[in-house]
Image 1 (tube, rainbow, N blue to C red):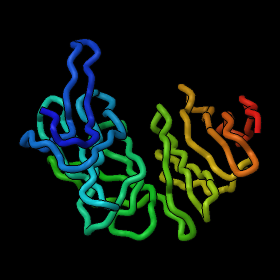
Image 2 (tube, one colour; image 1 turned 90 degrees about the horizontal axis):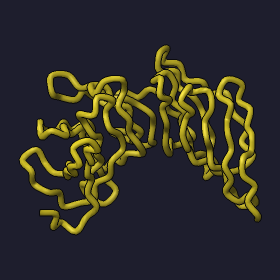
Image 3 (cartoon, one colour; image 1 turned 120 degrees about the vertical axis):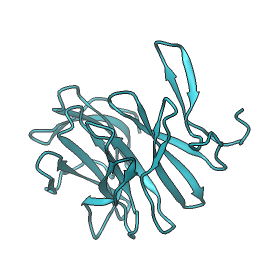
Image 4 (cartoon, rainbow, N blue to C red; image 1 turned 135 degrees about the vertical axis):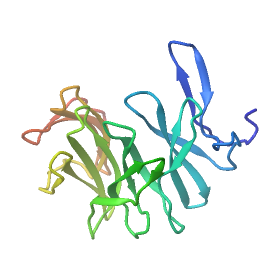
Length: 220
């Protein structure tokens, strides 16, 4: 049973009406720390789970929903933390935000071959900022990266097909940005922008030209 007094990850099969706890070890042993879910693979067979190893240190796992085992994605020398994860077009490629074997959080990927994960490959990093989150469009062609630079958010884009990091500065009208969702066609991105002099509001970014449109106008 679920007796570890910690947050766990469950997967609901909407067709079968069955709920399964997946944040357990390959032997079915429940963890002694908190777990959180980041992503489900496109084929619905795997779930990406972050497990707390100790305070300020966690690991990412790719777990087979049907009980086929798990793969440790972030083998590292403690400490390290994750700031998001998503599967690629297949479950063999996982995009992660983290500081695995490094000081600052960066955007990278791990490739799984023959049931074992390779090293964390850094795709985009900044010497003056830490990655606080990222989002990948449905087409798996573009990732938006949210950087924390001295307490202020800056966005950049990473072209997954060409492995190019577009670092042109996007002028945000507020200090802090929260990533929402890409539109189905990947041309628009919902953001929540806020700051000391600006209440939280929803904005839409037109990805091709970088223009922003304010959708809500909250009272200050």
